[in-house]
Image 1 (cartoon, one colour):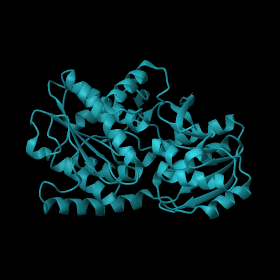
Image 2: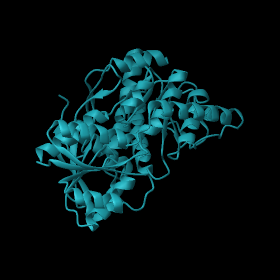
Image 3: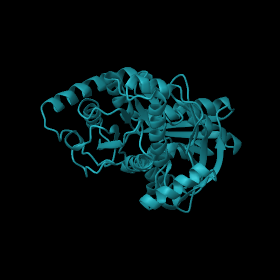
Image 4: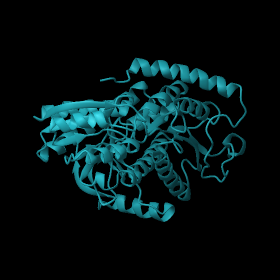
Length: 404
């Protein structure tokens, strides 16, 4: 199995940062991704020309366009909702918040460009991003270099926060998510698992590794491992191997953009085993692309809109009123990432990057929409996960699994 190594990622990041800096040095103010607007009414104009110096700038980089755009749009919506609430309540340290979001189009080069711009031209106080672990691993060393605290809302690969003491996340990590999926499979009596993963994505390879380790420790057997590449339209050879393996569950740690086609081809082959995945499945688009093929399948996620906790239902109500849709886990994590950032700024009583990072590291039992969050020694969030079932085009809450 091929897995992107930390050394390879660092080499790629170094080249991307150099290219980004060169691009910024030789271009005007519209270099990089497009500013999608902020809460101070600049209507998409470049914030370096129009923003109020008294505001506290929060940067966000995300895939607002491209194949995984629902991830970025949902996250940005969650951040916007949180910022509007905080500004309406008087802001932070007597100042209003200003959101500057750039679209990285889901591209590595564009990610390096926009993160560099946020740090060096927009001079953001803190940075939120990214959803995809691979792109967070591009943005993290840039934020670390410039001393800007970065909070990933939903990158679960453990390597993301290993870049340095300025890098945090508000989601659980793959070792826990892999264990959650393995425990759920074990509790359902599924003992023979096939694994189908994207060999090019750190998220997918990492989650596959952690699921396999936990599943076998619980007494299960991995009967076959099959890999694919991003953009592959046909999974026939891999699905044939899975059919021949007599697996009673198929673990697919991919993104919704791939899982829909996989699910249709699995069911077309006559395989009836349930499919199981991670939080990369969390998009309403999955039900649209997979149709009935995804019914009766399950995935781990960060929250469920069906949870009865007051924090969840209040958030769901506000989000629906603002955006006209039920918020997914990405929206909830964007909301939580902003709230934890603001809480750290308040406790630090400062907009200094090092002071905010120290306050973030000291976060204990923060009451968030996706559960109470404690930041551990590795700057990861210790928190629960939920299992959701896909049925009739909707996600339905099944159970919550807490850390040991």
